[in-house]
Length: 124
Image (cartoon, rainbow, N blue to C red; front, top):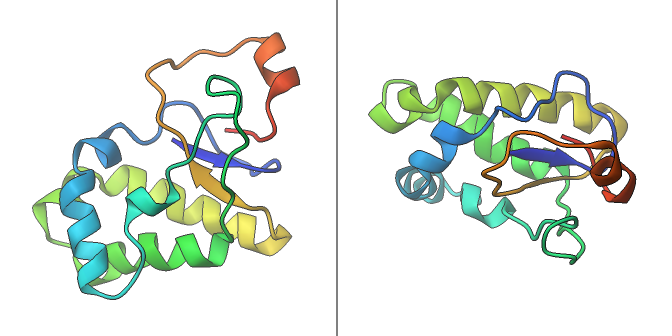
C-alpha cells in the first residue's frame, strides 16, 4: 500500500492488493520500458519492523506507475491492477506538488489505531 512522509489527500488502507498480486509481471513490464520496478519502492514498515522507511522521490515513482499506465493499457496484469495503479499515480502527482517522499509497505492488516498513528513516520 502507498505510504507517504506527509499528508497526501485521498490515500487509504485498501489500495495495493491487486498491485501485489500482479507485482512480478508488473515489475517485468516496468523494467522493459526502462523505469524502476514496483518492488524497488517496497520498504520496511517503521511501525511493525521498527526500522525507518526508505523514502523515494515522488517523481521517480510516478515514472513507474505512469509508464505502466501509458505503455501497457491493455496488458492483463495492468488491467487487473488498474485501480491501484491509477490511485497511486494520482496520489504521486499530489505528492510531487509538495515534494512528499513515497514508499510502498506490505501490510495484511487494514486497520489502524491512535497509538500506531502517533508512532508512524508517514501516512497512508
